[in-house]
Length: 87
Image 1 (cartoon, helix red, strand yellow):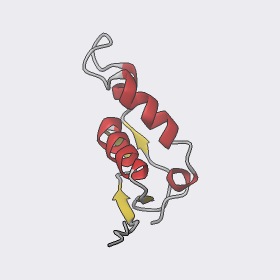
Image 2 (cartoon, rainbow, N blue to C red):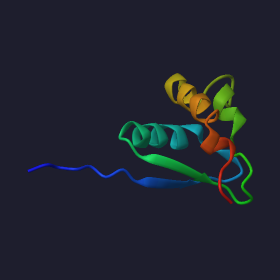
Image 3 (cartoon, one colour):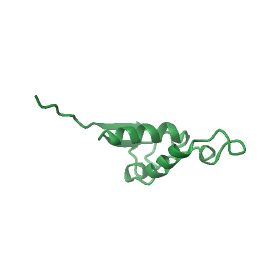
Image 4 (cartoon, rainbow, N blue to C red):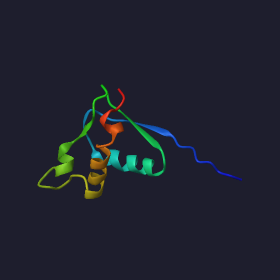
């Protein structure tokens, strides 16, 4: 028996601004590593932007995203799918 794994297109809706980069980057990386295609969507089709304080540290460098998810987010935000989301 041959098992075929189908690849899915996964829609990730995002707010225009101030979302958590970890909650976006980690699932996105997991899905793309598994071979799925990602499609991002925002309200007006403009590129989204995470909460900048979560990249720099909210209070005196504390409570922000950890280094690995931040690196994943910076990788994802350069992707054409992220730069030109569907509306």
